Length: 298
Image (cartoon, rainbow, N blue to C red; front, side):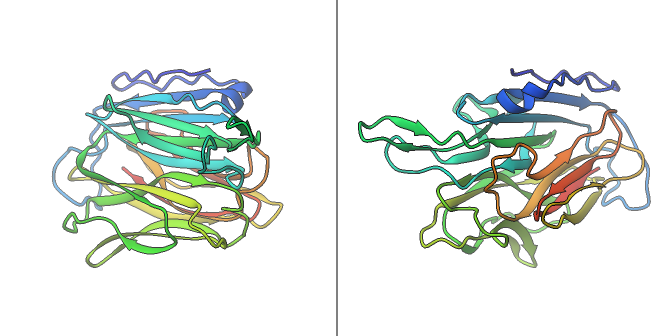
């Protein structure tokens, strides 16, 4: 099931939720408003802060049909959650890697995929592993100086050539995996800033680059405030943490994930959860030995 976001000024989001939506289809919610909030931690004098967000999910084993998240002309979409098994799939022939993926389509729209992997059979057919993957995404209504990077090799790589400023942030936008790609507790993917730009880094205990990481960077409006932090859970535990506070519209995305994503479970992973009201507070749920870092804009 796929639903599209409804965005109305100064209105609560609508939420269509049934358990099957997270397993076999997509879920989309959204909020847009014109709201001014004065704080002492603004980065600029402009009132052009974050004006809204949309939130989307897609979780399947074999369905590669994406969720349509809207036009690229007015928003930037980032990965805000991944759960399940990214460690079964293939890049070869008719194979399919497991994916938690925000993607830009040829017709200038954002799409979201979350599905398991497949390998090529002896007759050239696609044979699915039926491993579940759930992906969630947050879309921010900003597009300034946006760029994308795809990296397939482990190690650290310089990715963002835009001159440094306090309003620029980078996020994970997709994780792809094949057999064995996310089998170890210290496998990770992350984006991080340095004094001369943003870098993407990943590390996996496999002899070939079979875990691909996509990222996106964008500059937020003047007046935007940022909250960064981390969350983790021990093996066998599930923890939920409130990651924003105060009044004002906020939106959050992932910048770092660590852990073994190799369990056939819809809830084994890292998921940022949206609030039930337009200016409510976001949470993150982390389970079973995973860890994550996030950035929230306000």
